[in-house]
Length: 359
Image: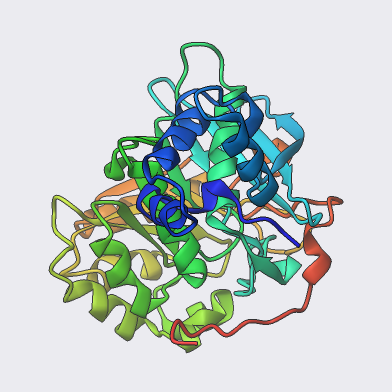
């Protein structure tokens, strides 16, 4: 029997679980203080708990959800963590150091069911969802690897998987990250990226002032149907219409659109000129990402000149734009490259789950 994990529950939920088990609710606060405040994951080392309670908790709960199998370091300083769960499932998280921030890109699923044609993770197929504890453990394993004095400043849900197809665990992990008595992260330092699971966008926005990122990648349904098959379920008019009408989106809380530039597919000046018209009425920022090549796709990035011309044309139409640079490409840690190659993450290749959020 698999024990429930203490990290899979936000503080109010864990307090309620303790209460229903006949334990004082404040004991949950003590346990969480040890885990998140002091980094202690051995229940027997939580010395302000009675020994009998420590034994009871150890018999009924697990603490550590993921183990670090290996860490790869890019020449640009990016670190990729290959993490393994007790059932053998493997996921990856990527730590991106910058001058004033340390951003961790976390995964939400083992593999991904969306099969986007340019993404290495999509080529794996889908194995299973991660628990909230497994999402949180990516943060804790990365935190352990930081140098003294360093902190994680930003979390992005942009790793393996589609976050909004694992909504309950993603929502609970955000509650844990932002609770002042656990990890105390500011919601505005958290970004959740989705390919467009329309019914779950509003619940995400209602969770708090976290950032919403939309993986767009095309300016027409015909092209997006091929690049992002989910578009056949939630086409551009439906997706962008929902964003345009949502009162929680504003210039102070814009949508971040991600657009991967692919040679000869979506990198024309016509595409660049369509983007401002397509996004009109949505407070937004556009992140342009040159395609990161990988073995699972023949698609290549455009030349730097083409990327610059695309950015200039879209900017001339009134869009706020960032042209992102590749980070961690030499260790397959860049956007679209996460595939846990050789680590067994693709054991579920070919498994399908419903793409509708109502399923």
